[in-house]
Length: 366
Image 1 (cartoon, one colour):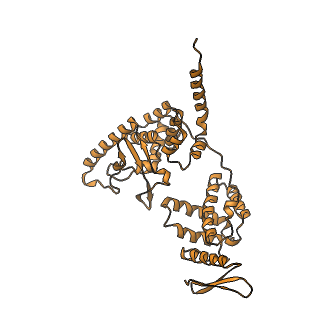
Image 2 (cartoon, one colour):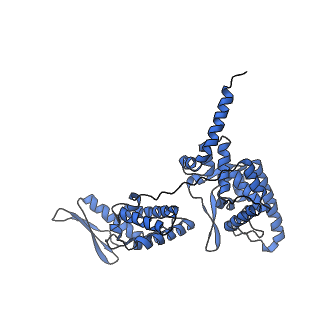
Image 3 (cartoon, one colour):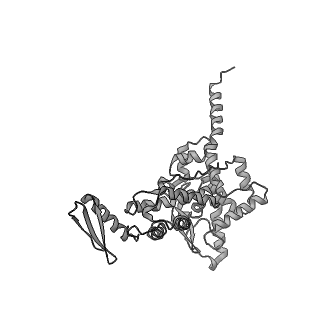
């Protein structure tokens, strides 16, 4: 692709021509700077594998090209999410010309999605994916505005996470007959790590009574791999309780015994993992989730998702009087406001506890 030539036309407009895939393309601007900016946007889009802004690109063709352009800079799980959302979006507004896409088109898409039975949460995620894609299109001069950002987001009802009391948390752990599962769940309750973060722990990440969280375990194409945690704030250090230290100590001893028993069958696809199968392979998150649900059902306890153990950690910390900023850091949240919104239901018990302590402090001696 040529670098382009910028010149002033007789009618007072600035113009630039550039060769794109064997064709001459022309951009115009009222000023030289505007013309150069359009020229650079065109060159940037084509270099990045996106369609050139010629007015003929549809939403579907752009999103297909966009998926290819982001594949190398997002995590595999994020890529699967984007691919699914692009399928939903293209099924609704794929034939709309990209340059003519309006907030009304996006709003109509969201309404049709909800009418088809998709949850408000899924519709909100579809809008978010489209907003991200259109941000790149806006940057590259393919659209004049981000219509997904301007369209109203679907209202997603807030679901209060289940907060467990210390006795309830212990009852859940006691209900797990498999010792390995119980140790893993103990770490979840005592550290608040996400399941993928727990399963990615290596023994080198445990030192001086702390866990250093830097990676998560993902499975793609039948093969496990370690990926960077989802954000900078997810990279964190979490102190270990005595029970958490005991669980890790027991896990290491059991792993050493399993390694001896396996002999030549021991295969470490990822060296040094703390939680492995009896032959050294990474543990399956979905299998753990099902095993956890079956154990609670067999014990007659209410159904829970594995992620509720992370909520239990946060709720117990808040109820014990820990500062919101501290809990947010330990959870790896991007913002304290996210922690506050998620665990707003803990506030009544905290308010009652605070008032009780104030009453005791101000109580007059009899």
